[in-house]
Image (cartoon, rainbow, N blue to C red; front, side):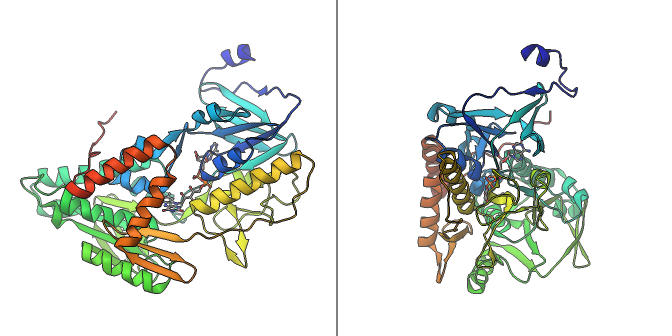
Length: 439
Ligand SMILES: Cc1cc2nc3c(=O)[nH]c(=O)nc-3n(C[C@H](O)[C@H](O)[C@H](O)COP(=O)(O)OP(=O)(O)OC[C@H]3O[C@@H](n4cnc5c(N)ncnc54)[C@H](O)[C@@H]3O)c2cc1C
């Protein structure tokens, strides 16, 4: 096997290796996000080989990505190495590779590593937990000018863009260009857009105060755009109104019911008007990765696999899709693409497979238990909606902070994030204000 791999040059396609199979059944999980990790964890006591494949070597706590993008936290504080799981779970092995193909006929996946070629990994059960990526609604050309926020690279790119814009504004002699550099446009007023805009507003007013001689960062213009009629359209209307009020107070200009027509080097054209801006950020739609489509199942408009009430791919035994990559409905409403749903779905499928391995049949379909939706709007303010309960303000923000600290992947992350938050809460300073040097 190693001889075959050694003969394969890195960029060349590929050594094809059938992974050895032992006595035990094998469960392959694609994706080490919330759903994939929950599935792996639920399989920890079962008598099967669990193989977790991810193209990244780390799990990211995505709800705090916006804090990396706005310099509150550094990347390592919200991420944890997936391989570490091998220490805790004896029946688990981790592969750092991108899955580029699935063969349902052979029951194998193609795990591709640029340096080592493609390895075919056979499975008895397959759990697809590959999440989603930003969607530019058919305008992929916007991506060049308006990065989305999905991984640590995106967060660092956004942070460099924001900090770099202030540096260029300080340098330029041209009034119009200075205004363009100091205009930030966020497209999409869902939770990510709202959280990012509010955090940016605080950064320009507090953190960057007194940092420049020729410009006043507090005069930056932050514009949050959305085609929908209101911000946080999945929340109840009164909460959405409160959030708009809060954003306005922080100095964010909220423009709803406005469609973005163009994004280019100079900024955006929205609702027929050009807004000159050097920093456009994309916080709008999402689309699933290519993997669900490879399962030959029906997908929704965003490319998410339509699964049965047991989260199985219809007519393909032993193949499941969970988390953001799955389109799940409950009581005729879609289960939201949030971390809790991904964790519950992953855990459900892990337990279901563990039972099937013991020859038992699971009769109870998946039920999503809604623990509530939250969004934070700058320092001291968050909103929470859970069933009929709707709250906002400082206490809700404390709950938000508590829940997020507890949910971080490692104790080490929890302690570090807590320390950073306390530091920036009392001083207004943010310690991760680095612009990486160009390669
Ligand atoms: C900026 C941001 C903020 C958010 N804030 C919140 C929040 O406040 N609260 C909340 O509940 N939810 C929030 N969410 C949503 C939440 O993070 C997602 O619902 C959740 O991450 C979905 O989990 P998942 O496991 O399905 O996918 P992900 O966590 O995205 O994991 C997918 C994994 O699959 C891997 N992968 C993908 N394709 C392949 C492939 N071909 N081969 C190998 N590996 C692959 C990826 O590397 C990744 O590790 C936020 C999301 C974002 C982007």
